[in-house]
Length: 425
Image (cartoon, rainbow, N blue to C red; front, side, top):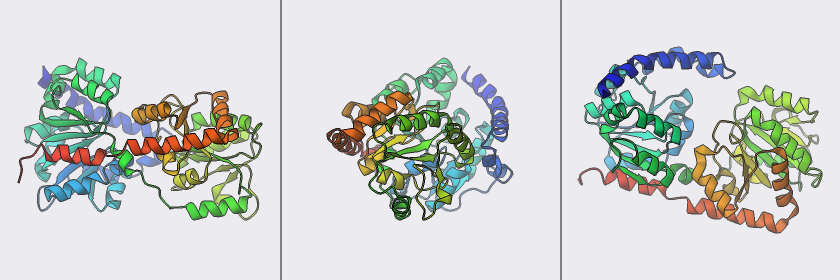
């Protein structure tokens, strides 16, 4: 039955990939598909194999996942004396691999002949799948070629786990080559242990992204210059980071409500996707909120709301903020990095949908370094507490730092687990 399901899946995989491409071409983010023609050769595994020694193959879906292994990957390469080969499902992920000085390719489609061809050409020493990347055909191809597979920084949702239990014959076949699942949290580990063939292969090593967090100085001088020129110096700043258009009405309304008690409060909106910034402008205009665009900010005082239409400034704005909001938590995205504000001892507000950072969010809430808010009144209430009570703000700042410190160490645990699976040299 497992082979029959794998055959059916392999027939459907190219169709699913085609539908996915059409979806993006018809979406506001269609610009992301402009390089599809140039990527096709890599997606069909038609390129040459990796020269020289057998590489350590790491598959990371996108830029965020590539960044997550930026510390682990070179340490493993040094430990195994092997070059790195990073594949990604997006051009942004491939570009991030190049920035790390690593050979980066678009991942072959999850179609057994393509995956097998890719493995035969590149002869990987091992395959590391980052976070949620479970590709049945690729997993089975790796098992067929004797390539040990490690799932690192692994997480899985209840619905996905239920799906793989439902198709257990295919799951058992696909998971046969998995050496270890190194999960982010105990909850993830419990779900993985219920999957066929993984019962005794799961351990908890933590979230690699927590180790990668580091305060960047990029853009901080420019932001400080803006603060001075805009007349914002000394005023509290509420930064809405990595926001999505569906979230922004709530954020703007909460800011307007909080200004009734703190009239000097400024709002900096740092959207997640610049290609959707026109939607944010429309929301501000509908609410008749005067705003300044970062690209148009000059020496004259700016409006009390700033729309940041440039990349690479999020941390710089977190650094000068009093309170931060982390986006992707009020819509269906699942949340961005909830701990990033803690790098600057800033408490984080976030919505109820933080499944992509569930453990970090739960700890922030438990230790009161973060605050949950789903509606504009709830968010305004949290802002009012932190902006009008200096003791409450100081405690939240200290708690955020403590949470960040307590969640580090995943890189060393992951590296030790992988090295321990190979015979001693």
